[in-house]
Length: 102
Image (tube, rainbow, N blue to C red; front, side, top):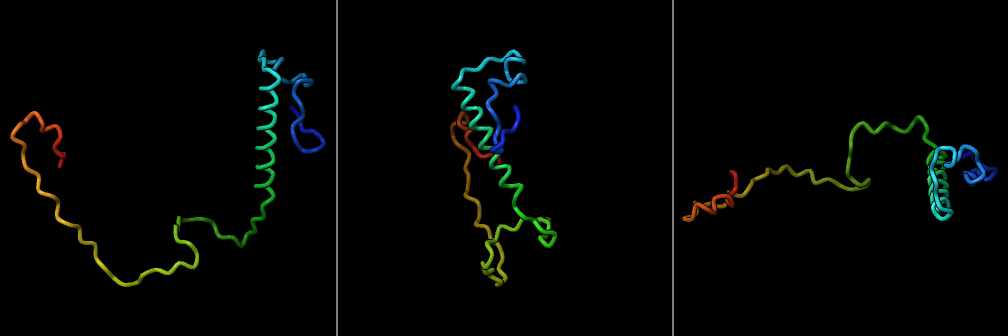
């Protein structure tokens, strides 16, 4: 497959490097579906490549999930977990497989 003048991929049916040369056979609807998908991906790739990324843009060295402009609560607080629930041994030991492991 090669690119046509419009920047998309041309129809592979007349291309000697197409599926026939590799022993693959596709119906016309399958070829149309593949060609449509390839052209969509090509357009997306060209859009990504056209995005300007100047050298002033810092590298993403860490992940920061905060939305810009979001304020942070600076009050110091401590995490206090609640006590774990009391677990009792069942009278029927056949049910012990249902007990938590800790």
